[in-house]
Amino acid sequence: MTCNEAIRVLLVEDEAGDANLVKIKLRQTQSGYFELAWAQSLNEAQKYLTASSFDVMLLDLSLPDSEGLATVHKARTMAVDIPIVVLSGRGDTDFALTALEAGAVDYMVKGDFGYDGLARTIRYALLRTEMEARNNLLIAALEAAANGIVITDKDATIIWANPAFGRLTGYSPEEALGNKPNQLTKSGLQNEIFYRDMWADLLDGKHWRGELINKRKNGNLYHEELSIAPVKNGAGEITHFIGIKEDITERKAMEAQLQKLASTDSLTGLFNRRVFLEQLEQERAKVARLSHYSAVLLMLDLDFFKRVNDDFGHATGDAVLKAFAEIARNASRAIDIPARLGGEEFAILLSGADKNDALSMAERLREQVAATIIDHRVGPVQITVSIGAASVLADDISGEAVLHRADAALYEAKDRGRNQICWFDP
Image (tube, rainbow, N blue to C red):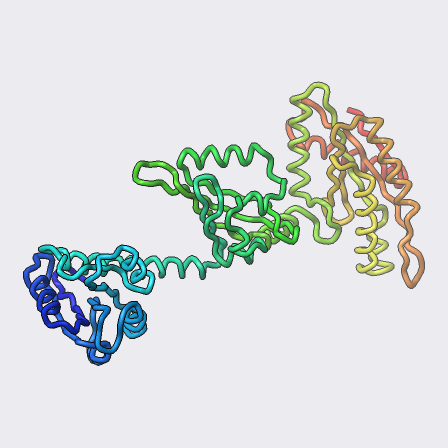
């Protein structure tokens, strides 16, 4: 409603003198223009409401067809969306509060309107009703939001949460009230520094956003993207915090799967060539930087693998590759990098290992491969592996230099009859 529009008022009053006073006060006001309709009973008011629309109702509580607070209740059902201002001859504060609780938005004593008081009261009633409608709309939007939304006081105690918060955490909004979010969902997987830094930003008035792992009511962990905004009063003091919580568990699982696909060989599950070369470059830089640190590269090639494919088929060849990859994985330490470089060619980067460590591990692996038998309907398939080994040197200018030496040692192992290990000596 604009300031130039007439405010349509329905006056429900059975006393002509009181009705005339209202007409006079609204006519002389400087607070806008009012169109007034006068009904002398609730029944007559109902007819007006059916025939036309109104912005506000001025309601006397003593009518021919209704008396007291029941009048407010009846009028409220007749005019659900119209603000009601009660006009009464009683100046009783308790009675006024009771009228407000019954559904009125304001209360005025007849004859105590002042010069412009009645018009101002009507405008304030309209403003309050408009603000209430807007607040109800915002609350409905928050209630319907797919993300969990929680509001806390300045001490981080929950004062409101939406249904999505309950679906996310397992705690109903009613259960959440009076608790701190961390009391409900903290998993212990974020350290105190994480929370310290978060609160440092928030208490400084900054918007915080991050990812964390939280725990549902049933104990299950989930990934959450959390956004928190501080709310300030007119003096710039923080009074509340609003948190928006999104369950990103599926997204994180998909990201992990994509990362795995991008970094591993699809058949064997070992690291692929790209990731291996990146790790080799990092290891080379570490050896160059730390005088006490050493590392070794093993290059491994399955002997006569083409013959396996030709004689037993590619399905058996794949089974051989997977069996070898499992042996290489089990033989490697947690800090080592086993990878399939392509075809039947594999590599293992032994972090922090010296020549003796590498040769000992390579021999164990060679023996395990030689003892492995792959079942096939034609007969058992037995495989062996040739291994070339070389140290990562401090003066290597790239990982390719290490690969070249280990590859040379591998070819020497094959030239010597296969199923053996050769070390590259510069």
